[in-house]
Length: 166
Image: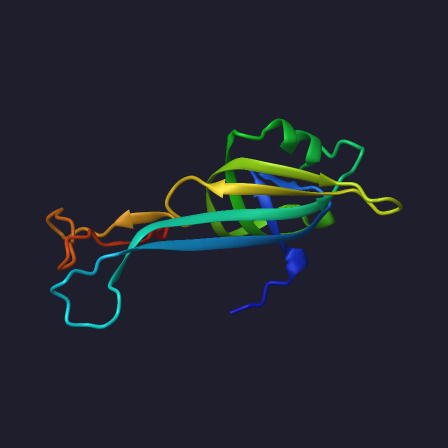
């Protein structure tokens, strides 16, 4: 397993890297709900998964020139509220903008752009992408040879990450 350095992990919106990026982060949050009843023998609360949320944030420097092979603050601000295809990918090449292997990918909504301009400091911005579907990986149902879904004892359908076959 190779180590991916921070400068080589980039957020791509569509096929374009975020220009002058400083850092990026992924947050995955699981929400549970209580499933305890008076019939339970345990002293502990019984929890089940209610939902799974994810978001990606990226911080970058505001640049005043257009970078055609990248996406910047002005364009992202104009796209707030729209759906985009988002990838966390390895990068190489000039300015680390040549997209390599996707580590994670999914559909997200540009939900927030915050620009910070401090006296005598470079102007930066933070963009937040809120996940829209499943997680950031391609999940698919597991089916038997005769096309039946596999179910757990409590009724959930089993899913797993899909791997492309070449």
